[in-house]
Image (cartoon, rainbow, N blue to C red; front, top):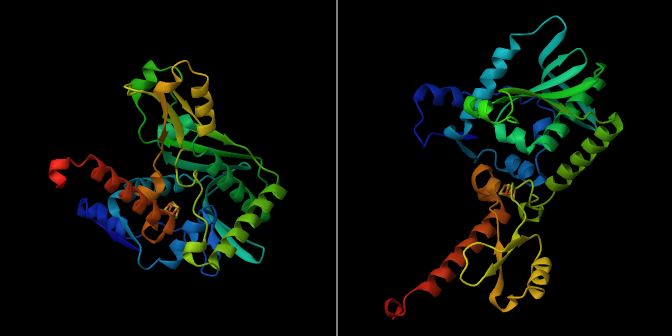
Length: 307
Ligand code: SF4
């Protein structure tokens, strides 16, 4: 992977980022790390296949660098009852997986996240954190360390002192997020299913691997807006075209109403996926968008200019 500096971040920071500070690659013979296991099959395989060609812009890694710096500092706070930044591995379905766990203390696994306050408020990464920490718990249990609780210690990089003063439900700057502990059997089943999905995808050509799901693409489902002629704002938004049509059919002004599709962007594909240049789903999506744009431009082209 090549780190680029198109945005010209200062040299000392760029050097730190380029040094590949992250030490969590794990053993050579391992199948994958916990982080990789939790990726979608499409991202996992394309990142493996195109590892040498991939590029990442240094400015996109600033927060990751800050997170690593935080981990380095926390590592020094080890007590005699704790294990900090321990990397554990285990074999499951004949494959080795490994994970670097921030803190194990008094049978509690804690993972430090340097994250946005909005992630906490909306709980948008709770599912991912639950899966990750339960796999860590599995690794510890396999190494004969009992686990009784899981938690994320969230440190907010965009926390506002002003908001914390005026909004009663605004979080503190650091919050503990309790994570549901699964039974070992559930975690084992989950890991086996993920491994099997990744293994199957590895045997397929790029274009035959299913695209990431809406959630994995960080894309909201499309909405159907009922619009009244002459109005800019929707009368009502619906989850499906059927519901929108039904609403229109019962409306007194039904002749003046029509449906507009409100599509949301696949945010991850667009700005946060390293393999988007190799992904047929995103390349087709881009082509479709460009075609639509061209068609709209042709329609709105003034007649005099066109002739
Ligand atoms: S471009 Fe989108 S669909 Fe393709 S691998 Fe990346 S996130 Fe998944």
